[in-house]
Length: 467
Image (cartoon, rainbow, N blue to C red; front, side, top):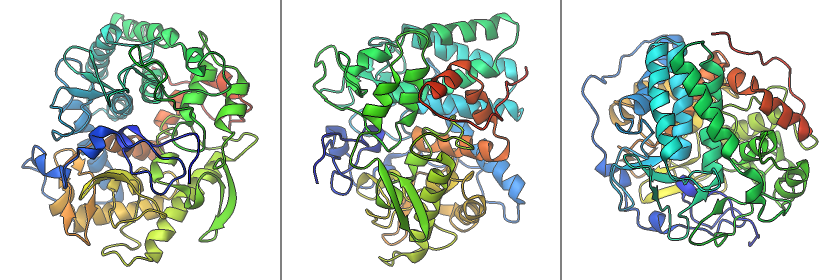
């Protein structure tokens, strides 16, 4: 199956065998050694599993422990999130990730709101990060996927992916706009933080990425290779947030036609079929990996979010329940699958990195899949969370929460942590509990204007956050 647009790349490095058009397998993915978790820094002491915790206490523990990835393990110069805890892809500990940092910013806001860190400490931490970003490499206002956490120089993600990454930058600003809304105090640190975020936000040339006025957004541009990556981004997948932000910008916005004639126009946008009794409005059959319903919706609130094509609460809930039902069905009879152990998404695996779904399943479960689905299926997510912690904790619980994945059929348990997987666990637990990040993001006036421009309806329940 060949299609012109090719989604799911980047840290989701996947083989192009099961989703239409996933033909980009990056060199760094091919270089991943089997069992890439073995090089991790190791699980710290003091992480012994405690049985019998209440649901609330367990959520507190998981959220707080996982947040440490973005706080204790942040790069010491830039405060950005490291790509992963283990050395891989021929790079070392200098690699920080743009999108994962955006997820980390949101995790820090959750920790601040829960008083695990003080407000002034968090604001100073983020101001240091934003000041670093204002000096880092960017291209038409857009950051690369990877950069050196000490210098801000671009680290190529592949030979031609050595410039702007619009999707990763969108994930970053999903987080930074939340921080701007949260830190609204009248003091020099918070004022400086807001101003710097606004300066960078206004510098993003979203319309440049229509490639001279085409009705679609392109993922990459490089000063060395131009548009050679040739990735027009069409839905439905994890990139919806990019179109929302591009329409929301006060400077260099895109027209609504870019959404309706670009994002919407693909052979795998509309679905409407039923799987395991759940109707799926959009996307691939069986929904694809669960990060599709998580990354864009860390800030974008799916409650009451509708446009001409879907009700996004229905979409994301159906996607989650299909994934859960498939794991219960377990047609391939993998060890461990069941009502307490489910969740297929992109993650490390026993032979590198892959993106799993009901149509591409090799027995690897990633905790971020079920935990990131908490708002959509809380009872099922809690069962999985408790199983991961109480039953598998001696193998997958460590200093930054749950390690990335496991495959009981092959007796393989990752020792690695990845920014893009740790972040959604914190953020979606918090959204399930308080809706904090949803309220922050949806309180942005630009976002509300952008959604209206694209024809979205919202619930109207999103209120500004008081200092």
